[in-house]
Image 1: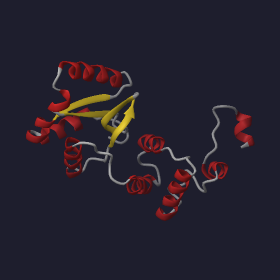
Image 2: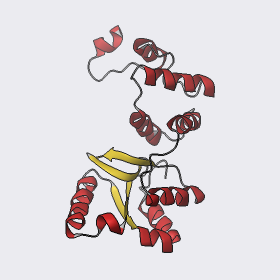
Image 3: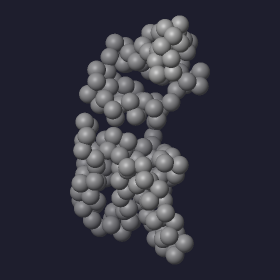
Image 4: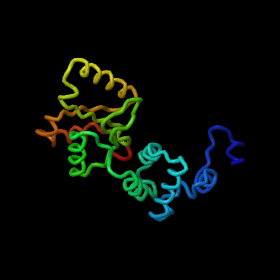
Length: 187
């Protein structure tokens, strides 16, 4: 810790030293820990209120092929449990993308200060699932455009999918998702 303080605000503590500092055991060591050890680390960090799953997702998106990432993703998938789907459309969309073999996105997470339906951080893509019941009046129509603009200001793509389109053109919805994902290391 003395070295970090000596090097200033841009310095960081990592691996075993960071873990010792936070009192959670090993950190940044997904490549060297067993799945059980990594699970314990995640649980211990959560118990001590040191777990930031969104930060882990961002780190994974930055280095998707790093050693240990597959193990970490497997542990996080089990640890998260079932996705936070809140509507029939979200569950239907989740089933569609799982059948297509697409990576599991985040559901109902805050992005750019707005809770969005679906988010792939590694693709910088937000998908909003619009049912007629909630998006069929002038106020909702206007609010949707304001929300889209706010998200797009953060260099994120936005795709709106209606329930009708999800029911009647699922392959076209998948094609749109794939076309709009950002080309990057994980795309």
